[in-house]
Image (cartoon, rainbow, N blue to C red):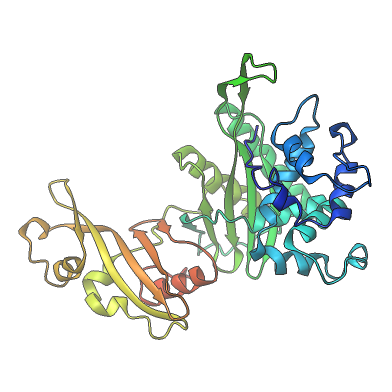
Length: 378
């Protein structure tokens, strides 16, 4: 069960952003809703807004699924993305030039609803920021089998067995996006069952139970034999399931993706301030160390913040940290074309946290050049 934010669709001013003909075409798909029209056949926006805000009677839930999807894809930032998809399609010929992002989203749903769902999944505003990395075996040099339909079905079947044993149900659904040098797997999954109280249209209290829907992302990079995981809840069994099952399905080996460290923080100790240089990375202006965490010989964790962090690393003057090991570091990254800064966190081992987009690729390039990320042996 999803809980949708329909505030924009329940406001008349937002409904007016959508071309009336498209809005009517949408409403005609759900005749049981009862279209709010004026005597002249035009849309009664006020009545329609009230109907959407407080629906009565038996309503097709697909309508609310569609409204939520169109709502989220109607942001102005998605205009060019939607235009690229519908621009050369025959059904867009009569649209004209005076269109909004909401028009494009609704037009795409009317003609290719699955395509709109895929775009929403791929370009969701909730970009993952925390990744677990694993490298594949460099000695065996196995080739990845492309994610054919049979292999995707096999992957879903094996993962469903594991999720069912963990009382999550057989809820895995997989969508694959192919990008240059990588495959992106979007995995829909169910969380443990949730029970809650609700109020019926008659004002009575009722009980509902549902399985919340969540998404994980798994990236495979065949050229460097790397898997990158973005998991909603990083339970160890989920990490292990993805690591072993993806290796088994696409490389024929459950242990193909090993537990070898991908990240190290030794460059901070070895190179000090030089480890923060980024001039050769196009678009990066500066990198500043803002926090370091140390594990001491006594098993204590010490966090050093601000400018003192680099001073401590440079001289390791504090007696507490004489035999300590850096276990994580947080950096502030500034780009030349943006006033905002990015925070990047690296943990020695396999975990990195940063927004992975075009700037994120530059961050990863910097991590490799400065030695924070081991390059996979070819």
